[in-house]
Structure formats: structure tokens, C-alpha cells
Amino acid sequence: MKICSMRSLDNAPNKMAVELDVFVGNTTIMDEEVYQLWLDGYTVNDAVKVRMEGGVLEEFEASADVLLSDTMDQYRTFQMCERLLHSPAKLANQLLFQIPPHRQAILIERYYTFDDAFVREVLGKKLSKGTKKDLDDISAKTGVTLKSCRRQFDNFKRVFKVVEELKGPLVENIRQHFLLSDKLARDYAAIVFFANNRFETGKRKLQYLTFQDFAFCAGQLINSWTIGAVDNMVEDMDVDLDKEFLQELKELKILITDKDLLDQHKSLVCTALRGKTKAFNEMEANFKNLSRGLVNIAAKLTNTKDVRDFFIDLVEKFIEPCRSDRWTASDMRLYLTHYTNSAHILDTFKHQVVWDRYMGVIKSCIFKMYHD
Image 1 (cartoon, rainbow, N blue to C red):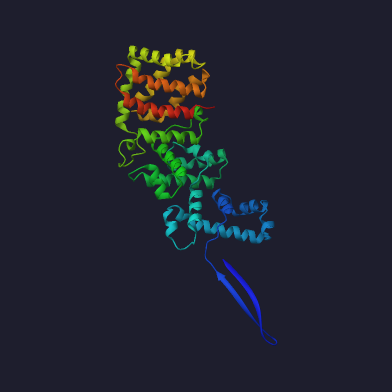
Image 2: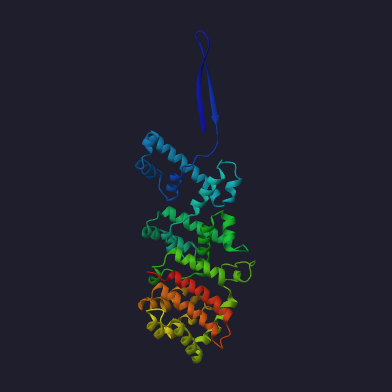
């Protein structure tokens, strides 16, 4: 940045001395609007058009040539910064660009921000060359430029590779290594978790669910069903499901295989629900089918294929039947609360801890997923 001022000093007849003050600074100037255009994959010429349409020429009384030159200059700066953004901690320690800390935080956060429409297409897929080949199609489908799709995909892959070698909590590792906000770090944790477990999210029946629906469910699974839920200093603690817990879930089958227990459970739940909901008749009629659905999902989670189909199974075996019976969201809450709590009163049911660990997540996920 340069600031110049000139003053003329008359010292003697017919002589004029000129005093010139010059201030030179080296803070890197970055226009946030141009940065966003660069991130969105606009070419320099397209970015210039967008800026002209936004009235920047009139605002700064500049010519089209000056605007083109400024845009090119900023694009060059962003391209030089990009390798530093791949390892955000390096941005703070380099001397090439003088960028204030608050501006660094904006650059990093924006660089790692992604489009919900894009992430929804790759969620649960392997972050490999095979998926990268599909980016042309994803770009055409979502309207996100191919360049932006590539940046976002490479970011997912980069975060995945870094955190898979680390011990400790997933969200915290992402936040510390990539200097992201808590919200964005949690979203990346969901992406890593889904990629690792290869959850199916692309089937037609799941299309109504948003990325944020899945991200919420990922948070529930990470906090309760992973190894990290019981041991907080092991590798892959927040990405691998707790195998011991998955084995213990098979014990829950007694709730549907023991006829007396099934009848007793139904009686307790229906007694608690009677008179509290218009959907009571449907709840009573479908109790055994719904209970079998939830317990069978639990019992099959030792198989990798059934883990992948977890969300499909929740929709097909529980959400769709309830939706077709026109349950409201509050009906769903009421039913699942009593369904979970009533199991504690069953005389011969001895797996309360596993039951609560399982149903805590199932309830939260279904509440989040039960919408149009």
C-alpha cells in the first residue's frame, strides 16, 4: 500500500522545492468477493463480468482495464496462497504474505467450506480416484463448477488422510490441524465418518434427507457407538464402530424372540400411550412389526453390509410404516420414549445398558429423519 502527498515549498524567488511523503506497506490486499468467485471456479473474465454487473466500476471510478488487471492480480495471489491453505498452520508462519490473523481465519474457513448439494452426492462414497472421475457428472447435476467440485473433493480427501493417522477425538483433531470453526470441523467429522463406514446415502428413498440430517446422525453415532465413546485415546477411535458393542446388540433379540417378553413390552407401551394420541390404534396394531424392525437392525450390525444399509433400514422398517399411518413428529417422540423406557420394567430383560446405548442413538436419528 502506498500513500503519497506533495507539498510545494517556496524558499527563494523563482525557486520551488517539492517535499514528497511516501508511505509503503506490505499488507496483502484481498477482496473477499473476488476470493469467493475464485473459490466458486469462475475464470478471470467471468469474475470481471460479475464484478462489473455489481457496479464496481462506478463505485471506484475505475476503467475495465484496471478491473481486469486487479482481478488477475488477486487470482495470482490466491493461487500462490493455495498450497499454504492445504496446511493452514503454515499460513500463520510464512513471511511471503502479510495477512492479519482475522483475515487468515476467513481465508481458511472459506477455502474449506463446501456446497451442501455437492457433499450430498459424494457422502458415504470412497474418497478415491473412482469417485473423482464422477465429478463431471456431479458438477452437471448440482450446478457447482467442476473446478469447485475438485477443490471440495480434494479437501475431503486431505482431511480424511490426515486424521486417519491420529489418536484422540476426531472433531478436535480436525479443528486443530485445519484451524476450522467448531461447526465446520463437525461437518468434516461427519464426512470422514461416512466415508470410512461407507454408509449408503444415494438410494431414492434417502433423497429427501439433507446433508445436515446425516451430519447430525453421524454426530450421534460418533458420540455413542464408536470405540471413542468408551476409550478416548486410541487410533480411529471416532471413525470405527465399537465391535464389542455391535456383538452385544445381538442380545436384544430376546425382545422379539421371547413371546412373553414381546407381549409384556407391548402391553406396557400401549398402557402408557392410551388416550394420548390419535394414532393409538395404528401404534397398537403395528407394535410387533415395528419392534421387530428396530431389534433386527440392531442384531445385524455385526455385518459390514448391514452397517452400510443402516439408514435405508431405518427408513424402510420404521419411518415409512409410521409415515403411511400418518404419525406426527410428536406421535413419534411419544411412541419411542415409551418404547425405550418400558423395556426397563420388563422382569426378565437384563440388557438395559446396551439397550439404552442403542436406543439413545436410534431415537435421535429417527427424530431428525422424520420429516417430509
